[in-house]
Length: 307
Ligand code: GLN
Image (cartoon, rainbow, N blue to C red; front, side, top):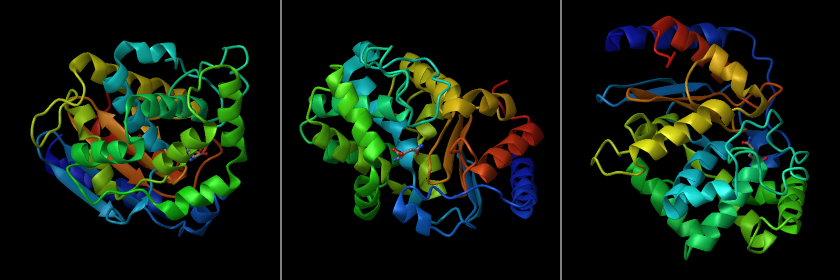
């Protein structure tokens, strides 16, 4: 589709989705996220050909939450190579993001890096492999985004830490099963900070463009992941990026992607573009209600899905 055609579809789908009643709910279990204006709605697309377009609140910062898990596993994969898959699996879990039910039968090896248990193990791996994990992870994100301003939000990290009993339980349980090497306090501090990263839709779309560009940064051509590794991260986003809604997201949208309880979604078309959508109210599976609806109509009307 032409760039003008894409712009027209984005605008019309945006207005159509904005006008339907949003029956999702804010992620109120994190006190700071309960304070966000639920009416925000923004979209931003960047293509590997240099096309960019945004509508709505695309320039407003928000908490990217679990979307950061895709960046954490990227850095851990770079550091550890294929060995990483001995510590975390690559299968969809079919369970909610914060579930602990499969850990016992799986001997503490989480099904994939995008459920909380998997991301917590990835944080442990990063702590083992980096001297200053919080700083080096942030430097990595700033570099792929070409944006030195990106940062954690300590208010959100502290807010989640103050009520993070389930994640604290998950981390301690995995530790008891032998798949956490560092102290749970250190691992969780890193995890809560990772989830507190803030970006606008534009920044998010720029950050993930390397996954649309076969693993290399668009602006300087430097490799973040090789072709095969990039294929694998996109495959994980396709099969596991939306927890127990991953099949439905593939069915409706047809793009690899990752969601967060801040209401953000990043979706990637390998070889073509990355698109960020943000609307804070979540459906029952913890994914943005309007975000999923927007992307479904977007790929249907542009015919720009991977299928
Ligand atoms: N920080 C959130 C949590 O651990 C991330 C969950 C998400 O975005 N799905 O609960």
